Length: 111
Image (cartoon, rainbow, N blue to C red; front, side, top):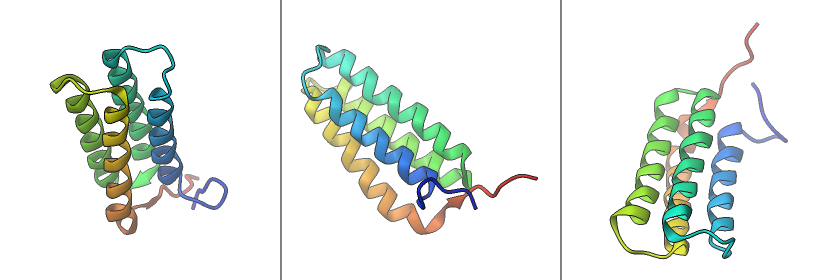
């Protein structure tokens, strides 16, 4: 079983996604639209990597899809601040990681 510092890769990657979403809110010179693209893009990319590293893949893929769509809707469907977009993304990731944690495991090492 492959782990990173004793934890599953999906947990690290989803946490990193939430942290990067939070960093976007610290007025790093991005417009609300740019921040939305960053948060949605980071969620999608890191989520896809996490899905490739876990089994069954469907659970992590679902988590990625929901988190990416939630941040995209918050960023592009409504006029909200980048902080709101990051907060939505972080909340969705946290809730879904909590709910799905027992249903996924790291991908086994290949021979």
